Image 1 (spheres, one colour):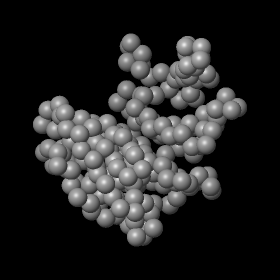
Image 2 (tube, helix red, strand yellow):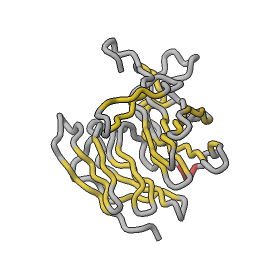
Image 3 (cartoon, helix red, strand yellow):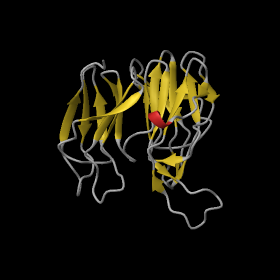
Image 4 (cartoon, rainbow, N blue to C red):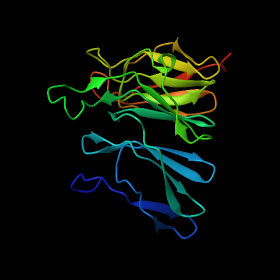
Length: 220
């Protein structure tokens, strides 16, 4: 965001050989807090926010062509949702659902929504009951580990941050509860390795310095 907190669309690439930043074509949709993924020669950018308003834009930057492509937007408007990417699927999970334009007295509420984009077909799949997370949550950590889409911690309908962890088995097409985090947290950073998902820092009852890792065997 800019100094006035307005969302920015700027894109820059660092060239180590020349030790400088090179400008690239701006994003079609200015935003911050978006999820980004590198796949092949494209950088995919999903969701994010403009102020307090969630963004549903789904765009990709082609590193060879130096151009942006728009994809079908995320179907529902959710703040503090999280995204994960498998080989051919993009997942948009959970978040804080905003009330519709006619529900003036409604409040945002936590959801267990999961929406899946099929990269081969270029469409968002029709949601089913089995794809919903078991727990309603927002501002959590995600990653693909052991053949599962992991959702760990975050905020839900409890008075303190969640410690629950669940995984969507990509083979069985269903959610399974996994061992809970030792420290329930939200707003954490994460690092995914081939065998472990690290959950770093965040907020528990206050700022947390905890660093914990989940190890999951390949799904069967």
